[in-house]
Image 1 (spheres, helix red, strand yellow):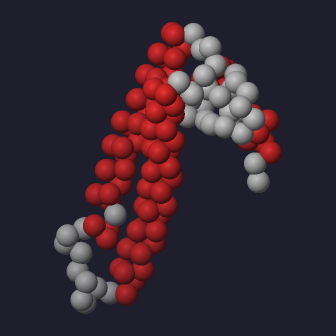
Image 2 (cartoon, protein in one colour; image 1 turned 90 degrees about the vertical axis):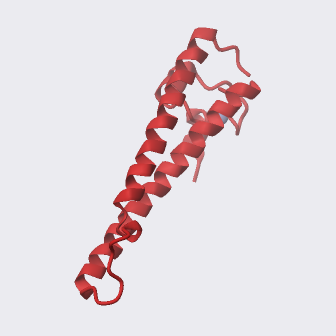
Length: 119
Ligand SMILES: [Zn+2]
């Protein structure tokens, strides 16, 4: 692990913890908005346009949930790396990720150079 100052680690950990809670709340909220999870949804004789709307709503919600679940996984992985002492190191080139970048993207696993080289 790069020699991050303790107060910086604390600051970033607080942000990651906060993000994790925010994202998991949002996933729960979206779950209740998904028409497919609506227990009152009428399956048999719903008009076809209602079904189409539900389908579109479901696709939109599940795309959002997918993105949030990825964010959640990244956030948890970053917290794990902090615990393991591998936080703040680029997983590609193994150089230290600058603190300024970690402050913007605390869950990132790549330095800017490597991220820009990603396909
Ligand atoms: Zn790198």
